[in-house]
Image (cartoon, rainbow, N blue to C red; front, side):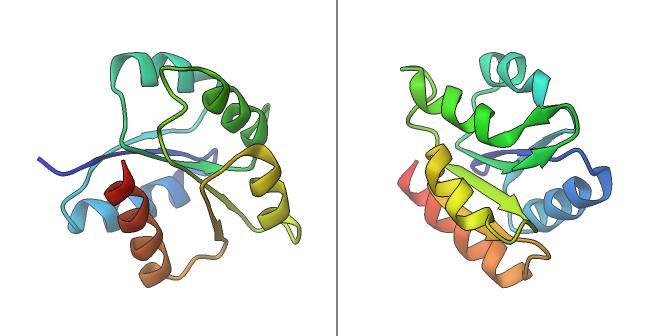
Length: 121
């Protein structure tokens, strides 16, 4: 079984594209479209890496990242923040993310970032 990746994006088509790409590479992937459900999912299915959209409707990915990094049980999980926002990289860094993935993302960059994070997990 491959490393476990949790993809959190309020755009189902983006989450599905990331999921299919990673599954083709042997990762086990779960997706969420609602940031409020991250806590329950992580409690039940601890991922090795979390890919998190920064600006989701109804919930801010930066706040999710901060809270995950504050808790002992989840602080070691590498977080990749993804965004099309022009200041996304600095926002990701401020939120404590381990990596930033700009949207639209290049498949090879996605795979490189996830492999690097999964290796450190």
